[in-house]
Length: 251
Image (cartoon, rainbow, N blue to C red; front, side, top):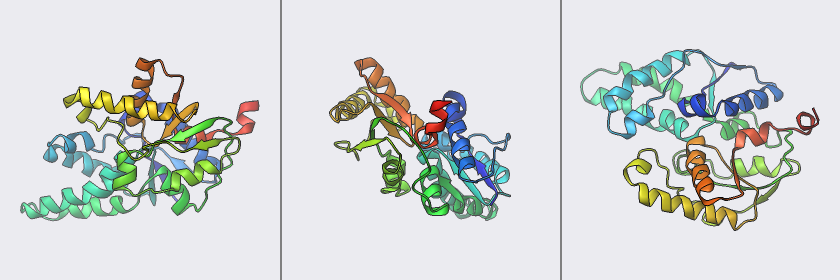
């Protein structure tokens, strides 16, 4: 299977270690991962702020870059949801506006083969025990796009429960938004900050050392809140937990 990593803008700019973790993890599982250097933004930021037509060329570019791969894996529920849920809408709206079906035809194939990391592991590779070792008490925050748009369900939890040394504890109010929401945090900063505090206080109540999630954009918001509150918690992407092994810790 030809598999490509779609890193995303946030990870490429701020969290490259998450991308490296995905490559280590998938390579360990026998997957040959390619990283097309011509990849760029999926257009989510443009679409979500109302610039739908400006998102179209980015979506078309995405389809061109990843066209030849059998699967596209991304460590981001929000970007995976953009491709899977909103690319088809972009194509159909272009068709409805009388601009032909070219965009819809270009986007449909890539939308069907784009996966968030945990669903690729569980649904495509058929694994939950990835050979990871992470000796920490961890709580998991299901991000909004992963929870509601992609319907990831318990896939991330099943993966975390199989990690040796990891103690997984339930997060109170887990399904409540952390308050990031892209431009929501910019347009409603007071509400966003309050929601972030609620999320951090809930995580602290578990006694966990680590709060993990599948979106670094949410972890950026939560981590900033942790820093302002002086919390002892650490925000960690689930890919970095799943990529960790006892052998690497000894080395």
